[in-house]
Image 1 (tube, helix red, strand yellow):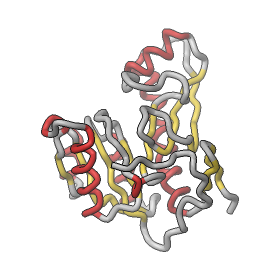
Image 2 (cartoon, helix red, strand yellow):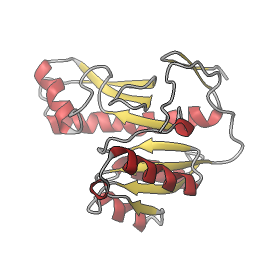
Image 3 (cartoon, helix red, strand yellow):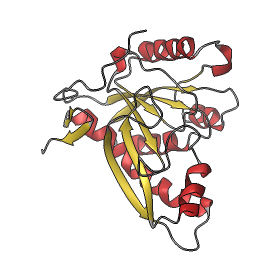
Image 4 (spheres, one colour):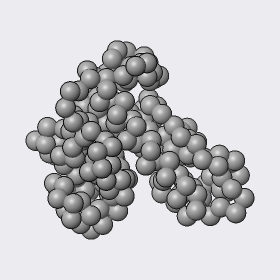
Length: 224
């Protein structure tokens, strides 16, 4: 499988869309991020269509949540494949069939290899201010507990283009939240998730508007 040249300069990354952007989302758990996106779509606040949600495990709570909203869901079990390459190929073939414009990692815990044809078309949201508290093993409450134990005064979330390293690709936007003296991992997680609910749809809007430009590892937003 050929690998994308992540340092290649591309300006702009995509042309503006004159129709709702077609989204595929990848989940491994409760799917709350995708629920938020779907609610915004239904409310008319996000001009998008969820064309496929792919779960890496059959016991994801997000599967029932999506099906109850009549969103197409497909289970592609990571344990059903011997290699990351085979799992990745099957996943992106399903995304191809759905004809998605953009892929969203939404609490997706399985490592995946992004093929050349999807370079700069896969987003991830991480519950910290990258490069703090990120990389392999940093997910969910592990991130928030580490932030509290380190004593940081602010945390937040980061939306970035995913590449073939954990939490590594070019950053699109970040949102900050305070870390309070009385915070637990749960209370900080709730505050960060509220920021995520604003940041992820905003990144989708920027992509769909054709306003994102990239040079090296820097993403710039072209003014309206």
